[in-house]
Amino acid sequence: MQWKKPSRELMDYQATIMGPFEAEKKKMFGSTVYFSNGNMFTGVHEDNIFLRLSAGDRSELMAKYEDAVPFEPLKGRPMKEYVNVPPRLYRDADVFKQWLGRSREYVDSLPPKAAKAKKK
Image 1 (cartoon, rainbow, N blue to C red):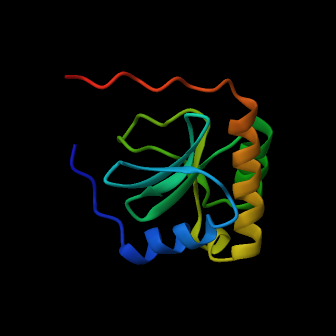
Image 2: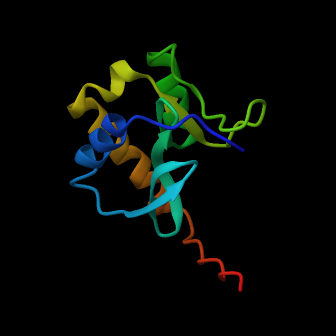
């Protein structure tokens, strides 16, 4: 699957915002994503930043921002619990950090995922 390459500016912006959040950084979807305890909680995909949120937080986010939509890296196949954050939200660094904190808290409440064994 070939995805549209995200802008360096968007990836750099998220990396800057991630400063106070200790996270494991990996490459996925042709971009940078962040994990805690083996669970992905945020990243950049194409022209979007996405967050993994609890059901209540997803409902709240989507009610406040009509342009927040489920994260769908493959057309017609949304990823459960993930939402694309609208630019007007993530461009407000203080508000975005609050939502990043909620995302991090949620994934930290989940059981840790064991690392998959690498194929030889």
